[in-house]
Image (cartoon, rainbow, N blue to C red; front, top):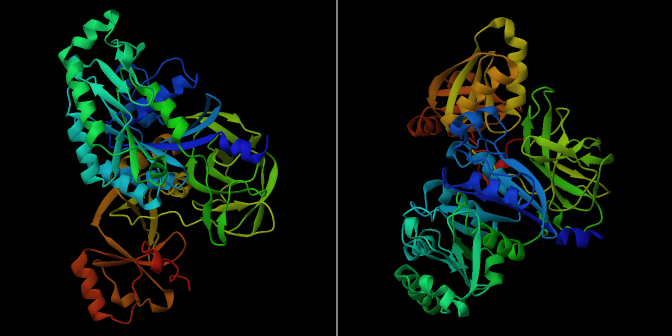
Amino acid sequence: MSINEEVSKRKTFAIISHPDAGKTTMTERLLVFGNLIRSAGTVKGKKSGKFATSDWMEIEKQRGISVTSSVMNFSYNGYHVNILDTPGHEDFSEDTYRTLTAVDSVVMIIDSTRGIEAQTLKLFKVCRMRGIPIFTFINKLDREGREPLDLLEEIEEVLEIETYPMTWPAGMGKRFLGVFDRQHQQFIKFNGNEEETSIDLDKMALPENETLFNESTYQSALDELSLVEEAGDEFSLDKVLAGEQTPVFFGSALAPFGLETFFNAFISMAPGPGPRKTTEGIVSPDTESFSGFIFKIQANMNPAHRDRIAFLRICSGKFERGMSVQLVRTGKTVKLSQSQQFIASSRDTVDVAYPGDIIGIYDPNQYQIGDTLVDGKERFEYDELPQFPPELFEKVTVKNAMKSKQFHKGIEQLVQEGAIQLYRRDQTEEYILGAVGVLQYEVFQYRMKNEYNVDIMLEPIGDRIPRWLKEEQVKRSLFDDRSLLVKDRAGNYVALFKNEFALNWFKEKNPKIELIDLFDTNQFQQLNS
């Protein structure tokens, strides 16, 4: 097949939601559709002894949460599907934000009992900023929840996006009868198990369907649907692909119900891989030469081998195992001889891959998040991946000095994954970790113990505001505990200010010293200029 034919078969998307909205459960159900697993484990597995396939870390199984993005690949109805299951917890939002740079569309799950929650709103804004098409699945209709019209209104008002219900529910909880499929003019009956019965709407009044048709819940839903069809927005695929309208589906991932209807519609509408911005202009997926970027690095996916895997989104050309490419940041030539695709922690060697595919490549400690790999004469880099300032800082030390070698190795490898950031106090050997949320520290401590056999001690130094400085402007006498002077992993000087007052006081006293917010895109280039 040509590259264009292969690209047209790719569907690469992420599933996002607030914690406990049903994201990992949906991922499991989709894997069942792809015939990858026989039955779906859920995040409730910590009680039943049955765990979610996409939760491969031991801590995920114990706590029943996703703390790292999982990548899964399977074939479905002639398409090659790449799903990225992301952490829902806000403490891991940085991993999720980076993952969103590697996808072509997003499935947003909303809990029908709670509506739009804080993390949903945060992630939605990132999708809107990047113009990513968004498909909405309103989950947990097998429970009593909020009225569908209220949920649609909230989506439109809070998220400021048009909605178009592709399906419409009849009842909820114990009264849940099923959903109207507007696309195919059918009613899909909920039987209380995994079986679904589809009935053409023009046959609903026939004697064999009379009982269902005459139910007050069905008739009320029919009235609501008429109202939606009269007053609602018209469907526009162009608006969907521009991220201006979201198709909405109703169902239950746990039951499961409505997922197959949703997924078939999603696969038919979701965009394939498109052109991407680089430092040298736009690169199209059908460009002959290979290129891609690394959006995630994961240490110890196979604890027995202490390996490091870099996740690569292929953007153009054809990947072939064993090919030599250039790592643009360093100019070095790299041979990609170990390449894999994943079902959580299970993996298979992949010999060929195309734009839209996500593959794992062995990392001999030479890649960084955001690195671009290219094959050919052109030297360009894909757009910067988003970075986020740590909000919490803790001093980290090893309990047993005899374990210092493992301590340093563990810190170096886990920090390179990008979820937690490392600083060293100026002119000392004191390490400080920066993170977006408290749970990051818990996971870090757990992984140091279980993957490197090292017990660590963490001592909070409070919230801090980081600002970078140019080396020539650093005067050590100006810094104290209120403006802690440290160096980041790249050797750049950073002042960790105790609060806004300390930051403003320092600015007033030292107006000639330039304080750089590294996470402000406009200032990012200034640091080493």
